Image (cartoon, rainbow, N blue to C red):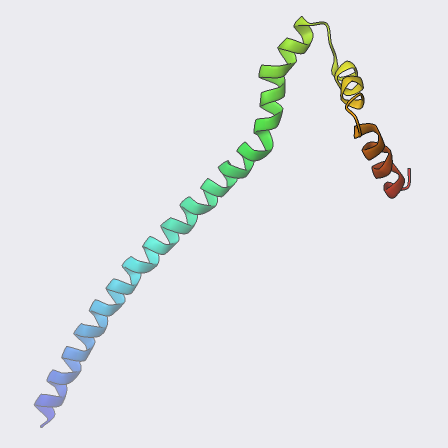
Length: 97
């Protein structure tokens, strides 16, 4: 009787060790995926924030310089769009300027 109990305990311990090993493998996979996901999100948000600046400085700014324009000229041109001036003034009123 004691021999069967010892055998059952050894089998239970062996099964427990296998389950612990499987659990460790799964936890490592989850950790690795989380680390990759975090770095991909950092790169994604850096691209979302940096892309407009890079687009302006490397693509649009040379054209503005070549045409003798500046941001002020561009902004003045934008103000000429019908309705934009009123929209901008409405925004300023709501800000309390």
